[in-house]
Amino acid sequence: MARTNISHDESKIASEALRTLIPGWVLAAVAGSIAMFILWLFNREMPLAQTLVLVGYDVTISFGAYLINRAGRPMFAGHFFVTGVVLLCAAITLIFGGFTGSMAVVYLLPILLAGIVIGIRSAFVTAGLVTLVYLAMIQVELSGFLASYRIEANQVITIVAFVLFFFLTAFLSWYAASRLHLAFRKVSDYAAELQTSNEKLQASEEELRAANEELEASNEELRATEEELRASNEELAAANEELKDAQEKVVRTEKLAAIGQLAGGVGHELRNPLGAIKNAVYYIRGKLEKSELAQKEPRVMEFLGIADEEITSSNKIISDLLNFSRVGKPATSPARIETVINDAIAHTVIQENIAVNKTLPGDLPEIQIDTDLIRQVLVNLFTNAVQAMPEGGSLTVGAHRNGEFMEVAVADSGTGIKPENMKRLFDPLFTTKAKGIGLGLAVCKSIIDRHKGRIEVTSQIGKGTIFSIKLPLINA
Ligand code: ADP
Image 1 (cartoon, helix red, strand yellow):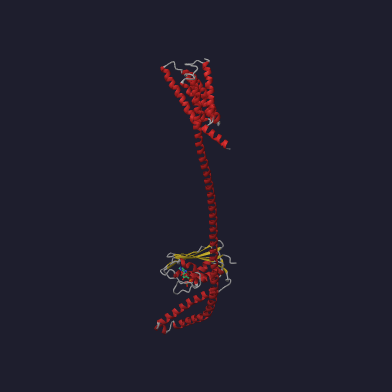
Image 2: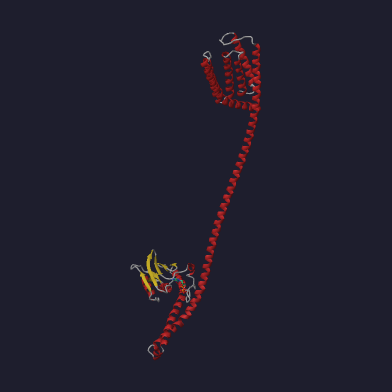
């Protein structure tokens, strides 16, 4: 495992070293050739052509090593490069001064390079290879196989010194490379540690995110439950409202029944005596009209008139009471609504400052109604309208067919009804008038209900009120 790591590290170092070193190396070679060209300009004996060949060769091996490294084989690229450079050094030594010449120091370069680009042990191997090539070149030079500028034999001390230098350089290269390797390992260890902590951090971030998502989900659930709760609460409130309405209806029905019973009884008991009083007044008026007393005391006749009026209004109250108490099906017969309307107008006291408008189309169909009762309804509505216009105004009554219904609308330009009173209008005994008894609209509703019809109201304060009645054309 450790070995694999080391060789893995070495290939990484080698790859990195080759990548950064080769461009500089090639640049140095090109600079060397330019320098040689300048020298050659001054001294045409300088070996310019050979130098250019060597630079070409150097660039080629550098490029080759670069490509092999890029192909992912850094160790092979390193060996290729170092071997190429050893051969280059051999050629340089041959051309520039031979094995004892100062140029022989170039042999140190591949040893240094090997330490850097191949690995910490290869510096020694390269030192051995360089020694072999160096010795072989000595043989080549001594044999005179290649022409040289200055060939001197038997300089054993120089040769030994060079070989020693080779190994010393190998040692220094090994030492530097091993330090570098150590530093690299430390850096990689730190990097690995960093990577682990980063991974841990990412994992906890992931956990946090998951926890957050769970929280959000439960939050969503909570919100949904809250929504459901609110909805059921609203349903409950609605049911409560309905219950309250139903309870109110029951109470009202009971109240109505009780009032109805009482009203019916009282009305019935009062009707006959009142009839007798009316007859008596009529009789007295008849007798007194042309008498002396009437001439002398005109107030007697006046009071008799008042008594007659009050009897009429009491009669109306009594018929309201009786109508209100009446239950069961009305006695219907085919009738013309315009006749009933006209009849009701004639039965209503309408002061002169009120204009009466009628919109009654000629082709209205007959309807099945109890004419007495419907007339009573209209008289009540007209009376209310008139009372709502003490300063005068207009009373409009119209009828038209609306599907299976006959719709009659009674509109006035009177005071209007306060919104808070709208719900209580049809309640028995609800009145806003000083002399009112609050039975008119309750009677209207009870009569219309018994005809299986509907009565509705719209009103605007200061502008007027419209009561509209819908009666089925055929009363089943
Ligand atoms: P009453 O006439 O004895 O008061 P009603 O049942 O006929 O009893 O009317 C109840 C109340 O409805 C009246 O006191 C009045 O406040 C209101 N109302 C009825 N019709 C009208 C109308 N056309 N314009 C304004 N208010 C009206």
